[in-house]
Length: 342
Picture 1 (cartoon, rainbow, N blue to C red):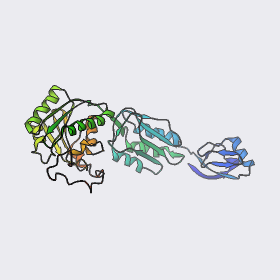
Picture 2: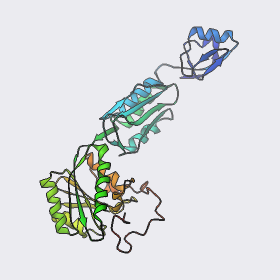
Picture 3: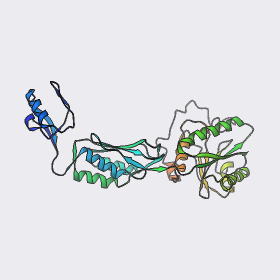
Picture 4: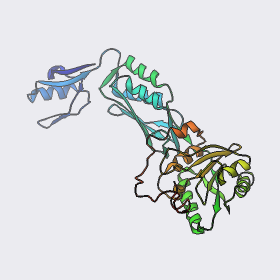
């Protein structure tokens, strides 16, 4: 692409690099300069104008942005028509945004002329939400460069995993220190969390804070109520893999995949399963409507995305979600999980 000043008399058919206003005349940035407007600008006394001109093999900014955006778009994404070198991608369904950061980084590293910006990986999105934008910086790029960016990123680098698990069961354990109204509020907060995903609470039960009771309740939720995801809210925080909730999961025939996560609030979260049904041991902060580590894991599991130990331990960078200096010390003085534990 050629770029620079040319005599106004020779500017017709080229791209205006900047907006020009003169004696009632307006030439918009990025517009192809019409012959009559070039003549009018010359008559106004303007001698030269900064332009861009495509050369053989170049791809214009709009066509380039649209091509890369279409190449990046995977399942459940819509590519909008390009404008001013920009092409936006939108979610077509509610779900979780999936992408490979290394592939996006690689596309951005090909050349400064090509940029791709996205929402964070695994961010919950709703239908119609913009999830990414491709912006071509100059007015055109060489076709070979665009090819390289597409190959480097790979096809379908972005997608939305739709929410698939819709039937959520809740087991709440009881201790004398935990009020029934706290459990009631917890259920309301969870229902509000689930609303954007299309999932609903299909059953809830309250049992003594004992592993045998948790095991029986899990069996009832999965085998009886047919829940496809179960959340266990403990009256006391999970302090060890041998504690009540993990022991109850294992007694029910399930397994504990990971206990704890480098996200605060949300440290004391447990991820497990019984058969192919995910089970979450909720941290105390999940009783609050404020964003915490529970949200991150809940949305992934509702979208039927696997959550492995490696996935959880990778959450530490960016995992400090709020200032905690003034928070009461966790597990101090016999407080329940709903009062202080993360």
